[in-house]
Every structure is written in structure tokens, then in C-alpha cells.
Image (cartoon, rainbow, N blue to C red; front, side, top):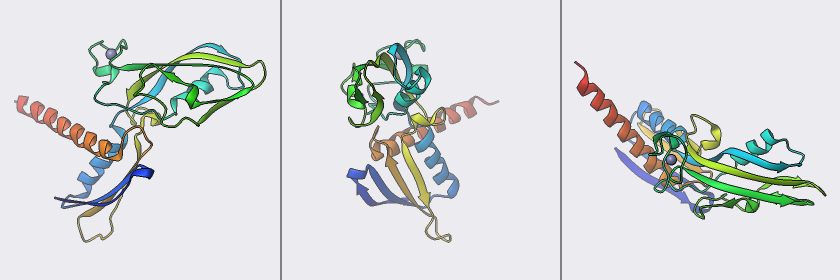
Length: 208
Ligand SMILES: [Zn+2]
């Protein structure tokens, strides 16, 4: 196996690299794990105290869920694998609050996180426009999730090209939405693949 970096565009959150000496099944497995199994943070539950905006609660919550949040995979675990047993705790969830009154435009900067390391990737993403006498007050909870469960948990756009059908060479492009760096996505995917293979190997050993 050989891997070569083709480009690293930090501003665009994108890396391109070529991998040779692997087959298409392996390349496709890596692509799928990167896109659909590497977890990232997203808002998953919203409790509204007030909402007189034009967006009804479900639509508002859906918009909040799609905001990419910076993700720290060392500090947080998936709720399903957490020591709290799935109840939700400080190791697997992050709370956000939002309070605004019109007339104004509510931006991602108005979402206040309890953890300064987990926040929207940009401050100026518009959420809703409030008119005179309209207001919003809510508490939201973000969790780690996987793209295979909901597209809001996708870490980015991941694809590969095969420049020459006669050669085992795959040109991968990994473009992050901003939650993780492209390199973190690749490294986490390889970690996940390794642990899946280990689990598989343990299960095979138990076969009789
Ligand atoms: Zn927990």
C-alpha cells in the first residue's frame, strides 16, 4: 500500500490524497466509514420555552440540528456507549441556550454553548428573522451521532476517483463541513475500521 498527499487546502477544509495497492472493496469501505460512521456533534433535542417566530417548533429544531458544531472526539462519547447508560450526561451531551427578541435576525452566534470547545463552526449562519414582538427562548442538547443514522451527523463530503482503470489507484477527496479536520476524519475512520475488524476476529475465534 502506498499513500501520497496531493493537496491540503486548509482554508477549504479539504485534503486530496492517492492510495495505491488496495482494491475497490477496501476503498469503498474506507469511504463509507469516513462519511457515515465517524461521529460528529449536532443538536438533537430542543426544549422551547417561547417561540412566536414564523418557524414552528419542529422546523426551528430541524434548522438547529443542521448547524455544524465543532467536535471534540476525545472529550465526548456516543450516548449509546456512555457510562451513563444512555440517559445523557456531561460526557455525552452539550447544552445550548438561545434567547432573542425581535426585531432582529438570529444568528448562530446567539446560540450559547455550555462548553466553549463545542460551538457552531461559524457565527453568521442565519437561523430565523424575528419581527417586532416576536421572541424565542429555548434550550438545546447536542449529542454525537453518525451519518448513517441522520445526515446532520455527516462529517463532510467524501469521494474517490479512479484515474486509470488498469491501476489500483484511488484518489480520495475529503472535504469537512467543519466539525472535524479532514485528517481527523480519515484517522478516526481507520481507528473504527480496525476496531470493527478486531471485534470480528474475536467473534470468529469463539466459533466452534
Ligand atoms: Zn453520558
